[in-house]
Length: 244
Image (cartoon, rainbow, N blue to C red; front, top):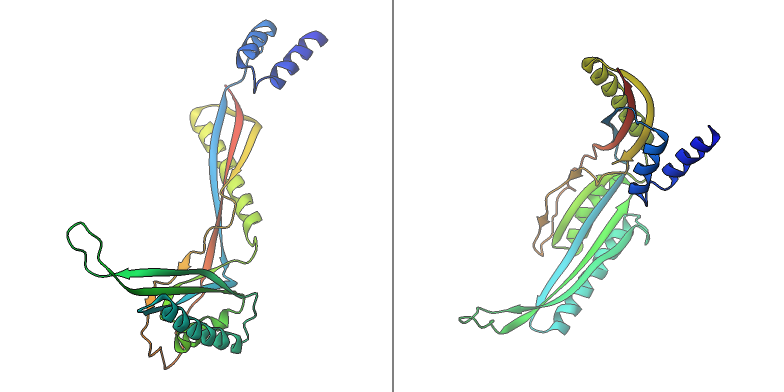
């Protein structure tokens, strides 16, 4: 009896690398797997957003790259100063991307048109927990020289709601397994395996469309932005033994 148990344990240990050997040893000891039932459950919770991410950019165009860059740097410096004046820190305001690109005139046939100038884009990302500054950030950036608001999104700064979403997903999976087993005329046995998927925080769900402005800025009142909530979801897959 001890020898049979040792062979069975060895067969499970080797299962990942030698399926043929496993089948041979299982046949030798007469091991038979019980039927299994696999179900997946999903759970989610709505969590109030506590973080806002805003990307604004300054696009400058000129005949030469040097001129375009100089204009861009001047406007970006003014924008950063305006954002700092709102109380945003250097950690909250970072460069997202920076590009210098040639601009081309009309193409002739299959030939690319001549270079007519250069465009410089400097995008700055603001990520902060100060939700009340969202609208003021856009207004200050645009009035200081930004001509693109690439996106505004609200999200979570941590793992709020994740544990609860996982627990709900597991409850739903077990409940569905019980319902399915009853409908199929079988009895639900022990849990054989549990797997988690989708428990991470999703990309922020609340997002504004891209906005563009001319050099005159926004003026007037700051735009009104409502944070709303973020859906945190998880998926749990469970495998059960079933018996007649």
